[in-house]
Image (tube, rainbow, N blue to C red; front, side, top):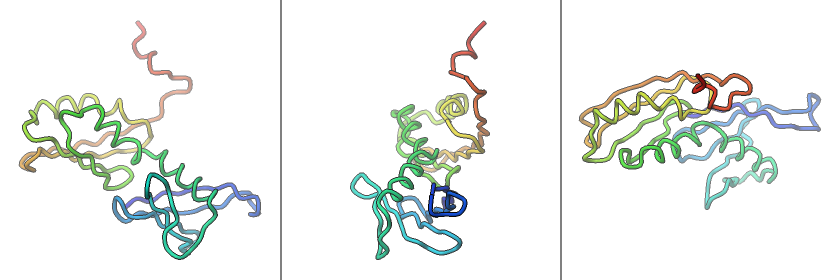
Length: 166
């Protein structure tokens, strides 16, 4: 399950913003939009864009803002980055929650070699803070390994190259 807290600027509110909870039961399901335990509607990715689903009609600008927020989260951005980094080794990256991922290797790949490389380089691909868990399987689900990575924000002004200075 994916649970996201979303703050939306709302001039009509006394505080100037409203807080929402976005819930997705499983990957591919619509996100339920809740405010104070009330389900306001659902948002689904359809035909390349975020759309309101169900009977409740929601403000288009609000839905676009929620969609941009979802798109910016690590669980949305990390799978394509991981797949593009190891296109010859990985068949699929499945998002299980906002910080848990299931990876399945392609048939015929050297699983032990991939494990060594993955462990060494995955932390460099994560662009968010938090604890990320990866469960990696070979193509036949005969072998697997798990890895937890704690990612921290880079220091202010960090451009990525400073670590290579002598």
